[in-house]
Length: 353
Image (cartoon, rainbow, N blue to C red; front, top):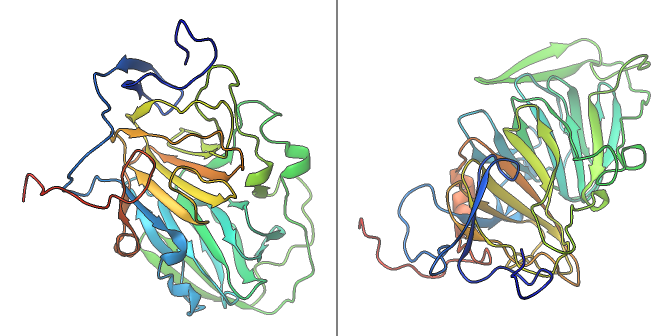
């Protein structure tokens, strides 16, 4: 946004406040406040911004190969965000009967053996697995770190144009068939009320050929997703993947022009979870790979400058359903200030105390 006497984008004037509906694609209103409104000196209750590093989560599958990823956030619509630090191959095969899944590889190399073929994934890769795909995860490095997003909605690539942001022919990878042994396996089906375990006499991952349609799994690296940029005036990011109802959306939030800082923002309909993948540049106070911040809907925040000379890679998850962090996430995290997404180091006494 530009002032009348200064051409080009120089950042917002003091007190500029952007209110948006439906994330960045609905109605909006811009106001000038007499002061900055993102700051707070005390907070008491669950709807408060937090930050953590996903590597600090006490992920149970780090040491127990039978364990599932550790949930760190969820909402009433069935969206669950979990962290996995798996170091050994899953001794079972797995099928999620309720949700589509997106796995983001923060660190390490992982092989996803699915019933439509194999995807080998490394740092920065998003791996999408449709509901009821059967798969096994096999780490290819001694340690791994992975963020798993589950949603009952159907997820698909949905960039704003068929080319430009995502080169689908070059960068979107589908599973490759391999020969697998025929022996049976323990098959876990995850439903809303827990895990049901089957013993099957033959390998449920074996596949001779895919003869029609498109395998319901893909891989795409964050570094290959071009951020949507507005060189002269500034503007919002755009999603590259979403559900059909847009209740959950994935964005690249990597560094991009212009140089001006965005205005204070009040997201009326979506919680925002931002994951910092790698630098060398910083995104505000987010500097360590695996840093994560959560800004609940309706909490005013002032996003940091995104045009960072050194560059950085980050991604944003928006959920229409209100998220709540789990005890595992609360134990690993801290209260967050909403100006640069750093630690909120001190509070005044809460008015309700």
